[in-house]
Length: 397
Length: 189
View 1 (tube, each protein chain N blue to C red):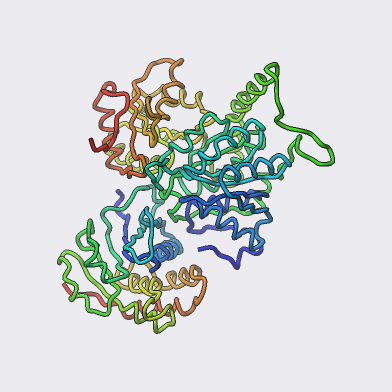
View 2 (cartoon, chains in turn red, orange):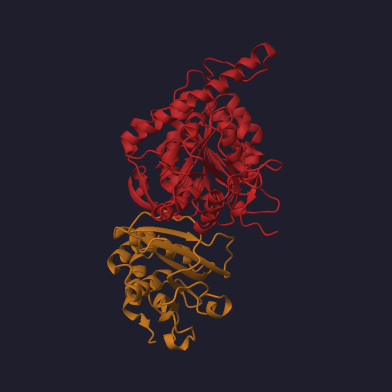
């Protein structure tokens, strides 16, 4: 339901019932993305379709570049960011995988590109439904990753992501579940452009490609220097934890909404902490409320920021709780759920040792219902420790 | 999960506008201060093939983010679907089944635990120059009948949402919604 007429004067603010995809488009438009390069792929396509409408209508003054592949989409964003433009793209699954080489380039070149990835299961076999293997496969490329729970959070995270990316000079990916967010319409507050401008001033990098002051970037670097550049990337990731926290607090002051890097929900005095990401968090909140009403001491920790991993916060919240149950809508073949691995790794050098249950559920868009989450909680409450390293929920064997 | 949550499933054929109807209804409910969530059946749509769309409505923010298995009410945009797919699957007892048809509700032999209503949305759409007799655009009309029989949404906010959502023939669509509101027939059980 694009609203062609009213957009001519810019992006109208106010509350509207829109899909998660459109919420992302509004976020990118309000962030005043200057270059958008994208290749269509379900379930992301609507994001760039609406941005193309905004450009065509003159509501957004951006260069919309049609490209022949996702590899080229990211290459175009890299070129744009290298000359100091704010660049945006969106993709899913195979499209993200095709960008892989360029993802390393964007991060290594320290270019603060923002991209939306609508989680879609990797083929083959072909699937268009949600799981997190596409984005998590890009864990080590040097991109920050934010996992979103609602359409509002998706819109807000686009804006926050630019703020953080441009401060630490690393690219950022916001991640949203296929269909459960991308194609679901719900009320979203579209902030005022003036307020977004106050929060996110124009991007003006210290170093950029400039024909009047020619330089080269990313050339061959000897072993005597390369190592330090990688050290600096890690330091930038570490800095990003503080920057993202501050950016979220400032956002909350201006817009009245904040999300944290992680969010503890009813964890006080809990016997069990459920760890969730994406839309599963939202459904799990209801389950936690119901179980709390029955006197069960359960809570959850939502992990919003996956890279950089908020190790200190994860320790702070989870070490207070005797048992941990992680729901992974992903699988690292040969090991297990990826969030479970990350949580284990964050807790290993801390005391006390807590049993951690790793549940894999909902791959390829299989529904994660309140009943399934209840089953997960019941299993973890009933066992002192997991019987298997990977507990598969709802698998037909 | 929560007492006041109402879930509705739309059945249509690809191209009939079931998804847009669910979005218009969500926008209308939102205008009345309700929280609403609308989504299509998560799949690959083809013109003419059976499709579904869903909506949740509540007085509180909707946190449930999974599919709908036990709807409170059904809206059927194409009466031939009654015999093509199991439309009442999971429908709660006492739920409305609103069917786009020129027949009376009693002619649809559905289990007595459901309430049946009909509206001739095809005729109303054609009368308002929405589409043509072979391919009438009925998604705005059917919503008027839905408002009338369920009382879940007011006609005024629905008309406002229709006018905002449709790109063309705004007044014709609004008039069709109103006409279907007046004509909807509830069956007797």
